[in-house]
Image (cartoon, rainbow, N blue to C red; front, side, top):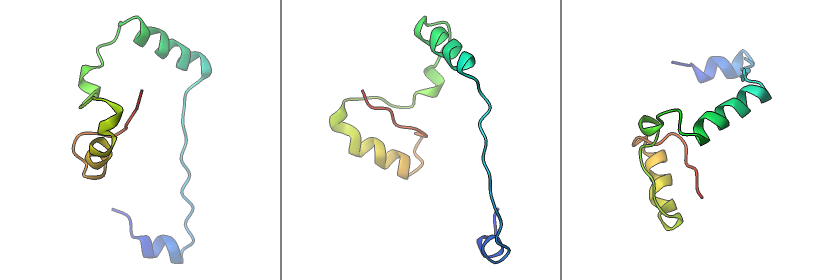
Amino acid sequence: EVDLNRMHYDQTHVTGSVSYTGAGYQWAIDILSRGMLDTSALITSEGPLEDVGRFLAMTRDLAGLKKVVLF
C-alpha cells in the first residue's frame, strides 16, 4: 500500500528497472518460436482485431489480461 500524499509531500522518487540483455531477449524469442516453452498459462484470451474493445475492457477490469498484443 502506498500513501500518495506522503509521496507527494515528501517529493518521493520512484525508479523502475529492467534486467535483461539483448542476448537474453534473442534466446527467449528463439525458444518461444521453436515451441520449446509452454505458454498456455500466460494466454488468457485471444481473438480478432475486431474484439479489441473487449480485450481492453478485460484489462481495465483486471479480468485475467495483463497485456494485450494485437496481430
